[in-house]
Length: 99
Image (cartoon, rainbow, N blue to C red; front, side, top):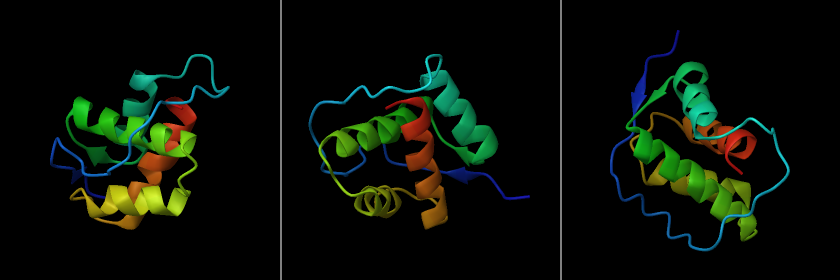
């Protein structure tokens, strides 16, 4: 079983700005589902606000056409996650539940 990870830093320096694009997705999905997925399936810990900020940055980056690998790398580089795979998990979960 993987150990819980903790992200730190409320101001994540992803340097991404823009408007979130609301794509067709799971009708009942939203922040509670994203947080549940990240915490329970990804075993990633952190304050709600910080995790949601990361997820929203994923949506913004996607709407702007930023490549997925670039966004995942930015998440990993600007947090204290233990692995690139954890950043990828946050990215994938955000696509499913927030974007």
